[in-house]
Amino acid sequence: MFLLIGMSTPLNAGIYKWTDENGKTHYSDKKPQINRFEDIEERINRMANAYSDSVTRQQEKLLENYEESIELGTPNSTDLYFVSFAGDSKQRVFMREAIFTKNLFDQNYNTKDKSTALINNSRTTEDYLVASDENLEYVLKTMGDKMNDEDIIYLYLTSHGSKNHKLSVDFPPHTVKDFGGNEVRRMLDEAGIKWRIIVISACYSGGFIEHLKTDHTLIATASDAKNTSFGCSDEREFTYFGEAIYKRQMSQGVGINKSLQGADDIVSSMEKLHNYKSSNPQYWIGDKMQSKIGELEET
Image (cartoon, rainbow, N blue to C red; front, top):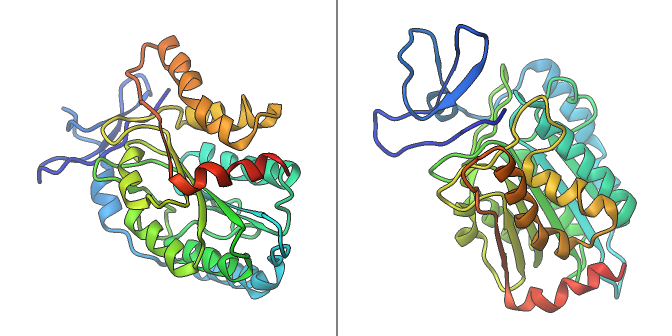
C-alpha cells in the first residue's frame, strides 16, 4: 500500500481520499465518482497553528527546560546535532521513523543531548514536541545557539508532500500548518546554522532543493520535484526512502554520506518489485560540504 499525495495548480484540482466497497483506502488527484470522500488539499489549506488545552500544557512542560537539555558543542571539534520531524499524524510510519532515526543517531553519532524528535501523534505529546513550524523554528534556534561554527546539523523531515512543494503538517483535531523549502531555509539562516544536512522523505520533495542550496549544505530527497515517493502506510515501519537510508544502510554501519548516495539504487529496486513508477530520489551537495562531510565518518 502506498499514498499518492500532491496538489495541482488548477482551481478545481485537489487530493482526494475515499474508501471503496471492499474497505480499501484510495488516494488520487482525480475526484472520485462517489458521494463520500475527503478533499485533503482543502483541509491542508485551512491549517493554522493551534492546540487543545491539554496538549498546550504538555508542550509547555516539555519546553520549560528544553534549552538547558541541549549541550554546547565541543570546542575545536565537529559535533553533529540531529532533528527529526514527523509531520502527519494519520500515518504512524512517520512517528516510527522520527523516533528510530533519533535513537540511531544518539547511539552511532553521539547526538544524545544534541537531538530532538518533533512528532505529530496523539500518543507522543507528553514525551515529544509537536511537529509544527513554530516548534521546528524554536528547536533550530536553540541548537544554533549551542553549536560551534564547525558543527553540523542533520535535519530529517518525513511526511506527505504536495505538488506545490509543501510538507504536509497535520495533527487533527489540533491544527498546524504546512510549509516549504523557503521556510526551512529561513529558519536555518536565522538560527545561524552554517553546516547542514537536510533529508526529506515526502512526495515531490525534490522541489525543496533549490530553496535549500548553499555551499555548506547536503540535500537528499525521496523523489524529484515531479514524482511521488512510496511507503507511507501504517503497515510499514519506514517509508521506502527511510528504509533505504536508515534500516538497510546506517543501522548496518554504512556512513552518513554513503547511505544518502546509496539510497537511490535501493529505492529503485523496491519500486521495481511492485511495478511502481520511479520516484527518482535526489542527492545534491555544496562545494564546501564536499570536504566537510568526511569529518562525520571519522567520529
